[in-house]
Image (cartoon, rainbow, N blue to C red; front, side):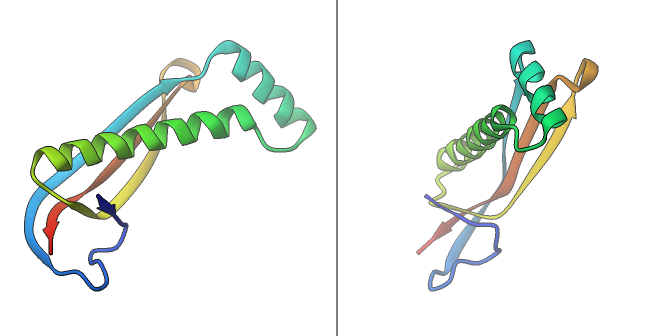
Length: 106
């Protein structure tokens, strides 16, 4: 399935718009990761634990969005937007939402 943040796909014609599709992923960060990320923040550098968690959540949201598009008969999703939110007590949860328009292209 072709996925893109643009509203068109170069060289392809959109034949049918099938509606909005959304995928969501909410993931918690465990205490050990929080502790290690805190140390990384104190000494500087990148937090591999949080970057990995963020990548997992993003991929999960995108895959869920594509699965829903496929159920609608789409072979592409255009206009994708990815949003990130921190939720929960002490900001312990990460929510990633991927939204786009399911389409049939030629």
